[in-house]
Length: 428
Image (cartoon, rainbow, N blue to C red; front, top):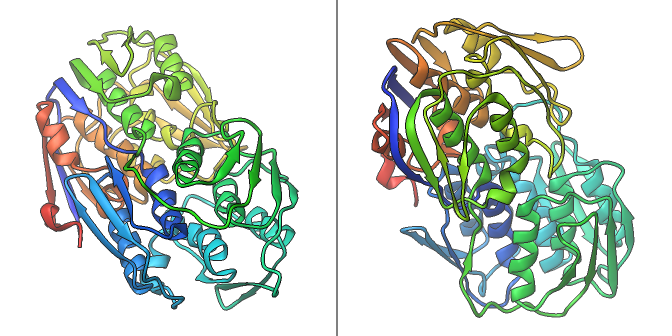
């Protein structure tokens, strides 16, 4: 079992550089199999999700090499083969192989994916879209079988009943080589979707409207990569370090950020009384002595990201009053609450998906468990704030989404150790 040990109370200072976006990376890697040439990515985060995706690629005879943030994938010898169930089960984003394989081979067989347990995340909108493109979908024993007839996939007009990042990305990948025009309406607008569309367009795809609520895709027969694609900075990692700096920092500069991707988040910190200095590609977080309570409601981009409601919770405990969080995306994303209470946090889950955070004068280090990535990030920040030592069990969840967390935090002056995993050998 992987553990993170934190000796709390040490104030953060200095600079930290944000890596490539996890939520882009886990879609871009499956999308790479649509190419007829090798594909190269830069600023790839060294996280466990990337390792699992490489294992899935290997099962299809797709070679990959990862070194110093540079990932090369060669799908030129790809074969249609069963995907490894263990890797699929540990990685929710493995469902992107449904759209990628459907676009590549006109069929896909994928075990129902696992990943973080943060409540129901149905794939009904994915399946609705695949069927509209001409696919036949059958579910049996936790496995999804998707096939097409002799005519293959064809363009269609698809209106999503619910805004879904995953469904939007999957349908882009499935339709990018389909015959004719596909129009996706009521789609998600996240920056990671723009990143995916940019990557595919640079290989010859014809995708228009990414970043708006309507995307138009004209299918093309072939995709070829001729340039390195640099993955956008991770706005969730950036928000996590900004929160830690606001909670227990003496002046921290968070580098390699796109401030426009963080406006709903940074506006809440400014409302709390954190006097952020925002420049073109970095954010300076000064020491802050007094914080005001706020109300946060998560929403699809450009609203407040659900992935940041847990990391910001320990910071809200420093506010002078009662703060409220309403997670409209995943109201069951509350597995951090019981652990924060064990540390002395005055936080509770109310009816209707409401989280109430009260001022908590003192957090105390203890043994806690990271139930999933962002819950684990909340515990890391609480551990930095707490008196004494915090031991976070099941920290492998945290490593799925945060690269070099030990190095980055110790570089800011924290006392953090990761035990039970050989960091240099995270990648195969």
